[in-house]
Structures are given as C-alpha cells and as structure tokens.
Image (cartoon, rainbow, N blue to C red; front, side, top):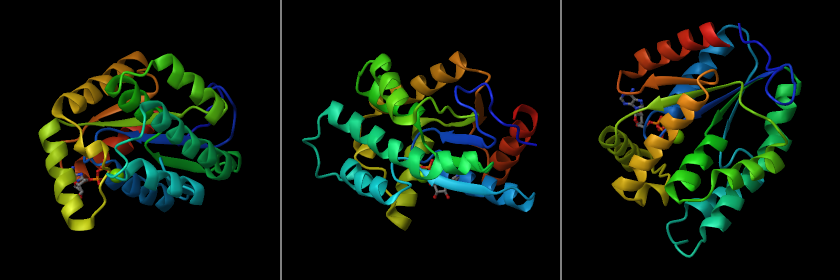
Length: 221
Ligand SMILES: Nc1ncnc2c1ncn2[C@@H]1O[C@H](COP(=O)(O)OP(=O)(O)O)[C@@H](O)[C@H]1O
Ligand SMILES: [Mg+2]
C-alpha cells in the first residue's frame, strides 16, 4: 500500500509521513490511530515527535517549551528546533526508513517554516538551508495537514492541557494574530506542494478524521 519515496531527494525503502497543524488540531490523536491501523495491516511503524523523539531531543524540547525562557532569541529557537531534528533523523528516522518501516512524525520542518518563518518573520530560505544541513535532504513522503479554525484549536488544546498537562507552551501563549499567520502559512505550503500534502478538515469527529486520512493515504502513497 505505502510505496517508497524514490523521488524525495534521498532514497530509502520506507515511508516517511509527517503530521502538521495547529496545537489542538488532532495530530497526536490521529498519528496514534494511523499507527494502530497500519500495524493491524502488518506494517512496521515507528512513531516519533519533533521537537523530541530522542533523549537529546527531549532535553532540547524542555528548553523550547519552558514558559520561563522568554529571553530565547528567534534564531536560537530556530537552531534548537533543527538540533533536535538532526538527532532524530540520525538516531531514529533514517535507520527506520532504511529498514523499510513506516515512520510517523508528529511535526517536522513544515512546523518550523510556519511557526518560525511566517510566525516570527525568519526567512524561509534560512529555514530551508538549515533543513538541508540537519536532515540531509530527507523529505516527507507525504504530509497530513489537519486544518482547523483557531477557536476550536485553542479550546481543544486548553481542555487537553487541563486534563493531561501536555502544553505546547510557549507557542500556546502567542496572540490570535500569530496563530492566524500560522494557519495561513500551512495552507500556503499545502497549495505550493499539493502532491505532498493531504489537507484534512479537522472539525469532524475523531473516527471520521481517521477514516479520511486512511483513504487519502490509500489513494496517494
Ligand atoms: N476530531 C476531534 N474532535 C474532538 N476532539 C478531538 C478531535 N481530535 C482530537 N481531539 C481532542 O482534542 C485534544 C487535542 O488533540 P491532540 O491530538 O492532542 O492535538 P495536537 O496533537 O494536534 O495538539 C485532545 O484532548 C483530543 O482528545
Ligand atoms: Mg500533540
């Protein structure tokens, strides 16, 4: 069902799927459901997350998400995201793809493009240059963008944070205008690369969204 990504810059026999969208859109929920769905169909699936995904990455994630770190400069933040990603590519993602696994990654370079690029005004060219260094040309085979309005996103993220304390803070603390830029940025990326992006309306129920993702991957990957 899931083909290799020979035309994605560097070749490997696996399939690299990334999940993108605003905090609370349902990335983590859907990533887990897709992993379960693919495992039931005999695939070897590796789940990972950015920032994080490795011991080193989790240490970097703590710095990035700590609300006390208001002094962090936009360029420092950018480099830390790519530092986490370089480690994850080297330690987890690339070996799994070389072994023919399906890798599901919760956020990847598209997040950096929209949050640090559109949101913080850093040039897309610099972000892509760092991507080439950190990821050595590795590109997602397909990217699931769960699109959702700001209000629903914030409500869901708030409820989840109260329940589980899984805040994506400091990003959570940004203004509505920032989040609006982020949503627009994601949709612009998706229209620039329609062959890679699968855009799913995230306002439907969890089961419906899961089915749409499965169907879209059947058709496209
Ligand atoms: N389609 C959905 N409808 C209603 N609630 C949802 C839906 N998808 C996810 N949720 C809930 O919203 C919260 C945020 O989902 P989550 O998967 O953590 O989002 P993300 O990882 O994108 O931040 C969770 O409490 C989750 O159970
Ligand atoms: Mg999540």
